[in-house]
Image (cartoon, rainbow, N blue to C red; front, top):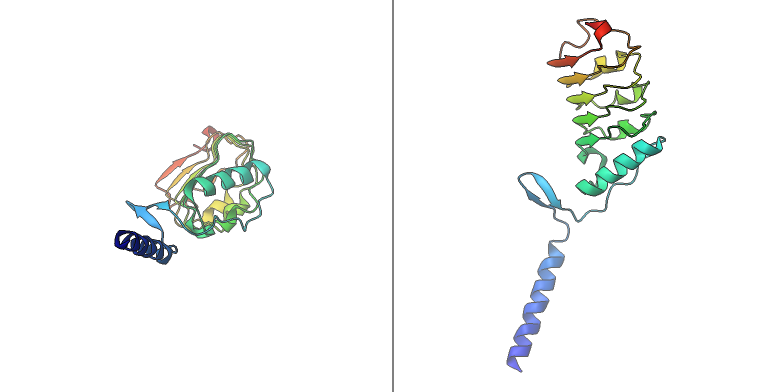
Length: 167
């Protein structure tokens, strides 16, 4: 009888302890491995392929706010429209190689963006990239109609890969 009572008290203590920790995230090496917050869903992206890529990334990384999304890999998905990507202002690395992207204006709000791969697309105007002050690595190679950026416009970038006609 006493053993049953002790077991019940221990179970109650364990449940109470777990409930008290329900609002904490568990991380290992600064990487979130358990998140108690709901997944982030408050975004609108018109391009279905980009929307699906973002949704899958949010689920796999257990992202609960727009600013938590740091890396996005959406290569070879047939993406045409980047509208809505600016919601994710915490993005630091974006891989959009081998898509059908022409307009990169929606990237302008991504002030934390450090690495950007836009190779093998249809980008024409690189001007929206000039405002990305954190940009360190840029690949816009294989964009045949790209208007070549001036040598001063992307000074902050340490690595730039341009199409042949711009070299």
